[in-house]
View 1 (cartoon, rainbow, N blue to C red):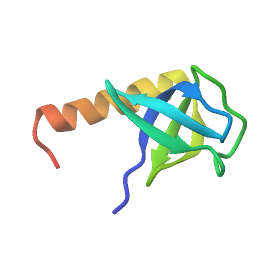
View 2 (cartoon, helix red, strand yellow):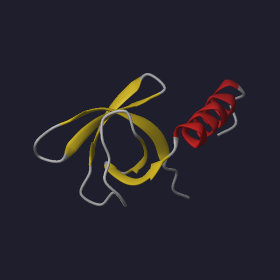
View 3 (cartoon, helix red, strand yellow):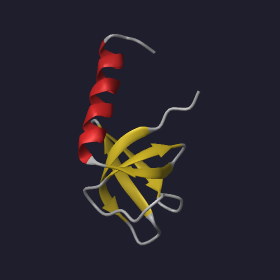
Length: 76
């Protein structure tokens, strides 16, 4: 099973890479295959080093809360 994580874009460089924040953890992702244009402050679903889908803020917060609940309750 593959899991994509929502992260907030905090920077974008000229080579089309972004740094995203996933609940305090920062990751670099490639923006080459994301489904629509993104900018700093947007949330994206990332998997295997790629941003694959832009999502709205409310959905991102909901998914991050669910992830936190899973971690807090050791359900993984």
